[in-house]
Image 1 (cartoon, rainbow, N blue to C red):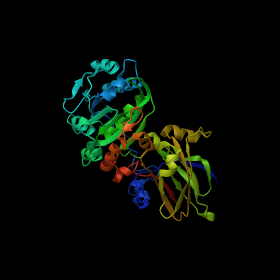
Image 2: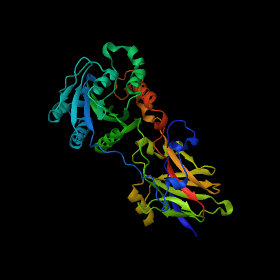
Image 3: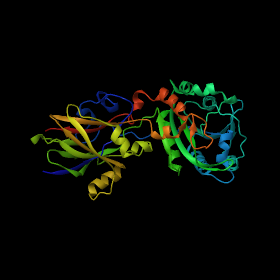
Image 4: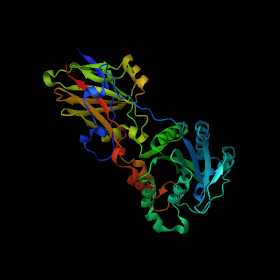
Length: 419
């Protein structure tokens, strides 16, 4: 009996890890991870809330930032005010704003009702130098372990007296401040019009979110939801819980197995009663919700390069990747809507034998935008960031290894069983 099956897969791979590592998590027998009713024994976790989180917003006001805060009005002013208002309304444990000047000056706390005027008019008193590692020290001095720190800066490294030797040491300095402590990091990159002697249309600036991994994920989600412009992103020390996914049982023809629906959420995770007549294998589609990943990791080109699959002694091959299209089948449409699926993956598995478990995860490769915007000499045009790659290398050295090589803390699993 023919049955249409569609499976959307997502597997994000980060770092060079062997498939023997099971795509980011240990895998036990099928009966340890799936119930008789076709449901996963371990429910998908959701990203933690912010009820116990305090947020400190730090706005750097060095001279290089002044052009974002012109009385002529900029995208920067609109985005930062939207973010500040949203955080102030959402953070029940507390929300404070601080002006960051130079290392010799104490942080200046600003009430949100007094923040809009200097933001909109450039009324902040600016510092002449920006030493990013020392700026981080000042920020961390205001944060306990449950506090999330949000820094707004152009991240242009300009130490006191223009000391070029310090620029060469910034990778080590950044690494020192993140290694061995409970600090994850999400870096968002945006652009804004900028006014100095003239107007620059797309000058880069950053929102850097630092703290424990779970509240950092939650706070970064709140911030991204209110930003209207294009946002580039890179994460360090952040691993997501496995996303929603399901076999889509109406897209491909499967004649030698049938899919089993989970009674709890209507998703499909199992093909049962597989028969190996004519050694046909299985050709199916999986739908996956990739919306929690940084934008660059959601592109079809990225997924083709960085998806990892393992199917035990069987052979698994990725045939196609698509973003979710309009589907005519009401059953698949309901699954996609209910689980919020965004992408579809077509998989072919051969040499299944007595049954197998397909495991998927995705590699966290460095996004191309970092190299594109990095500059090793100072940029008077204000369209690239001096020393960005050196700072990123420090974060990578401290936080970019081990389990954080994977997008998800556990692989996505599809089970194929015989009678």
